[in-house]
Amino acid sequence: MKKEYALFLPQAEDEYEMISESPIDLVAVMASMHHPKAGAIVLFSGEVRNHSKNKEVSHLVYEAYVPMAKKMIREVIEEAKKKYNLHHAICVHRVGQVEVCETAIVVVTASSHREEAYAANRFIIEKVKHEAPIWKNEFFTDGTSEWGGNCSCH
Amino acid sequence: MQVTITVFAALKTYFKNEFYLEVDEQASVSQLMEKLMVLNPLATSVIARCRFAVDNNFVSSDYVLNHEERICIIPPSSGG
Image 1 (cartoon, helix red, strand yellow):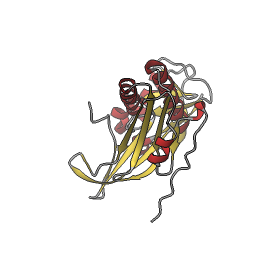
Image 2 (image 1 turned 30 degrees about the horizontal axis):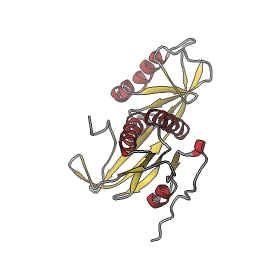
Image 3 (image 1 turned 45 degrees about the vertical axis):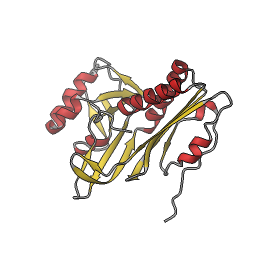
Image 4 (image 1 turned 135 degrees about the horizontal axis):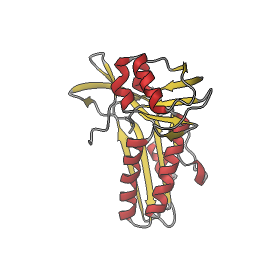
């Protein structure tokens, strides 16, 4: 079945964050992040894995309080750009059903050197995971489902 | 006075997605939390870990609610 990808075009600086109902095209996202001053571009793709809580995962369904999630992601991006002197930064998070091996969230950071790009990317994903009003509902192959709790990194 | 409550994610197990609630004049967010816990005691542990938002901004537990205000109850994040 052909996937319908989110139409992703280079956007104005103030339109760089997205909440997407469609699958994320990582190649298109990456292509929009090149910058003549950036010697380093780091892409993180947070993908759905097939196991959680010792059970087999069927798929995830993400829900967001969209206006506030967009606002918070925009603020995190702005903070990261200033803190790490980035040339470009973007974060796109899915909502709706996301299958195993699909991207739930992508973070791309572009800086002159790799140290800032790596650090900024980690900074953004941690902030979005822990603070943005976005939630996952995990559906398991045994027919059960469970809303995600705090991050497994705790 | 009446306020509108909007819930998300796991809270939908315990409450309607959106509903009106009568609260005392000058009621605070912490008093709202107590009222919700009485409304559905099963939601107590989730509510205790929630943040509250008005007009897309988080508010503290001592924030005083206003008539006909919409309060969003934000469970702990699980995105990413």
